[in-house]
Image (cartoon, rainbow, N blue to C red):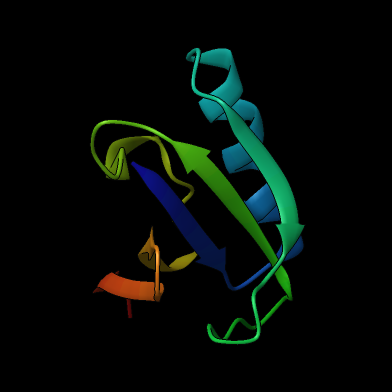
Length: 78
């Protein structure tokens, strides 16, 4: 499955990208899709069997699943 994690800071997105790739997960930094909102404008798109929440930086804003018709928000963090 393809997931998108958005973040409150650009640094959090970069740290998450590094952690995911170090754990063998195909991930890339990219601009946040217009359909999703983000405080920093940078997100991480990654392929995994589950959302891998434990590997995301603490400044994660939300996790969304990419679907053929758009995005489905799975979890929002406060």
